[in-house]
Length: 522
Image 1 (spheres, rainbow, N blue to C red):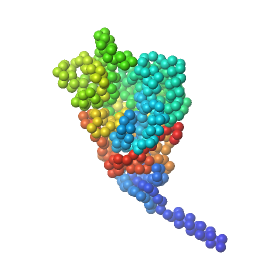
Image 2: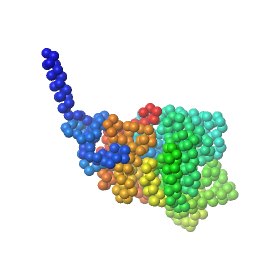
Image 3: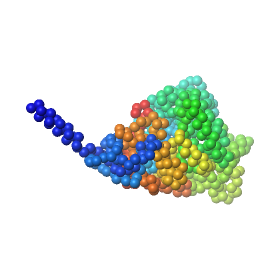
Image 4: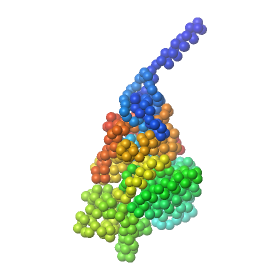
């Protein structure tokens, strides 16, 4: 009798062992890039629920859905390290991001973030969102809340309150603190203030990302300042959308990358992110001296002839030596709410349209007029391709779009909003061959996940979340241009977020499966 029970148990175990494994989705025969920089291998991926439950070669199996990925690259979902998510409540599915293969987006860059962060993230958790979303807390937002846009140092009590706000945001799930030291009011912050707030983020495991104080003539000093913040606050630093702006600074990436390497050799944790274009995007106000905008008194200062002369001189200097790229044709309008006919046109075009000479002096006058009208979103074609490639090849550079969520028909955005990740894969990897595919994927996935302290996203392994992008490496490419930016990329065939199809056979599914990711509540 005892022997019969043993035989029955053995038979049951053998039968169970011989049963085919069951999955919700199986990706067959794709070239799998795990995201750690290693070369791709032809393997199968099994997904159950929101997790990867098998990686290898499958024999017999059962699955609710099967993708034959023969000839395609199977990668972790891309992580956008710098996204302007401000319109997320109006565009919660974030199609312009997801169709690039992005499954996780980091918001709150350049010193600007929602406040209070906790309640904002609570709101996002109640709606259907496309990609997974993570946030930084913005220094500019905090400074503005306590000091406004004025040029002064915080009192001891104000600094204590600002530090408390950083702590609250970190406890709410922020991944760190961002600064925009080129913009108001961050430009007025002294180094000690930034270090004091970064100390709080560092104590709670956060990172520091910075739109540097200068990206043109003052670039080298600005990189050194970020390195000092890393050292004094003992915080990992990301030089965000790293670039060298203005013709006079072309080639300066050789020096900035050397500074990064030297700092890392000393034990400091310095990294970068980058978008793959030779043009930047920000407001027209970046051409105007900060002092002229301080306190919201720009019009008052322009009405003072002596001050206006100084303002014009500062704008002319910026056009010739900095973001203006020494050419009015390099300054292109993206969003002009007060005159939509200017969207896509240049500062040169505007001046000519008004029947005036396209001189730099007139350019300065029209910049003043644009700011008085409410400002513009502006694309600045002022970077050198050699710097873009040099920065991209650096082993500590990740990819971030710096794009604002966009939809066809709204404004004239920078094409990075639609094309960043496919552009790296198609143009820089396949066509220009400045790095191999495995390394490019690593810069979009595993390297970024490691920077954020994530161990179960940005990588393909058993137990990781099923965030996966499948693309055709022979056809993937961006289609958005500076003339016609509202174009989705080609070659992104599937985007899987938390185990569900966000893009299937190249078609956006109009559904959101993303989650809010909070650092201290992973």
